[in-house]
Amino acid sequence: MSFLLPCPLCGPRDAYEFRYGGEVKSRPEPGSDPDVWAGYLYLKTNAAGIERAWWFHSQGCRRWFQAERDTRDNRVTGSSPSSKGVAPDVHRPEAQRD
Image (cartoon, rainbow, N blue to C red; front, top):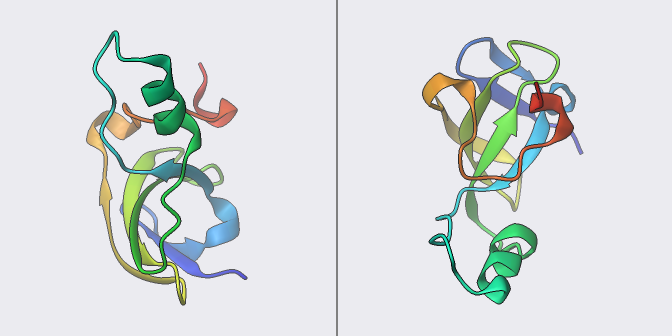
């Protein structure tokens, strides 16, 4: 199912132009237990309702931003740019590698 995702720089675009970067969540402290890091990297809350997630506009401005979306009907309630266009707290997809 596709939906419109409002890029803060390019405006509303089809979701196929973007790459999902994962939920916005707090990064574990350096030196944390490997199980804590595994949960951060691989576990998804996946609750029905509002989710705040990272998105990368791969076919547009090539910037990271955060969007808030209701997972029950894919209605996007807002988006905001990240500082410097990078997602500092997520495992970045190949699209962002330099």
